[in-house]
Length: 169
Image 1: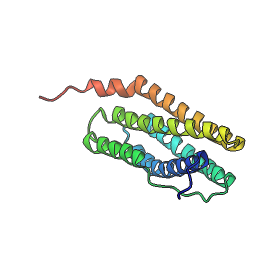
Image 2: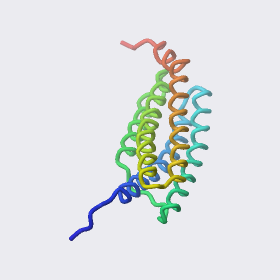
Image 3: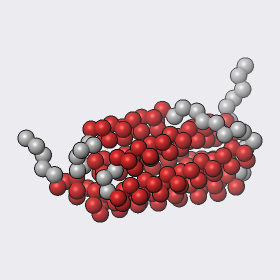
Image 4: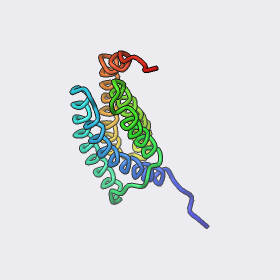
């Protein structure tokens, strides 16, 4: 008879999911940075790339705290979100709307991460993993700030820039 899965198992599986996701995001951020038209957006992607490296380091610390090797497992959700971002890069590469599309793609990633880190933080607290909960909370705050920063960029320039170009008949 199979053993019943526990919250510890769920925590570990979700940790592997976000670890995989972060490593994929690291690659995607480079592509998005190259594709971005505005220097502000390029800089935002560069900043978040550096943050993501730190987030991966924190995840490795959490794996260590639970006595598991840092390993990812394929995350279909992030694969889909990244694929949509790549479509935007391809479909809008010469359009004024590109940066607005890149921001929307990046925010889809951020919202996924906010969801995952929020859940992992609560589970870590429930499991008495105080240090892990603190590390996860640090990343959660960074992801939330990145989302807010992207909104500011969209509102300050990208959305208006996207709207300026007239639709061709």
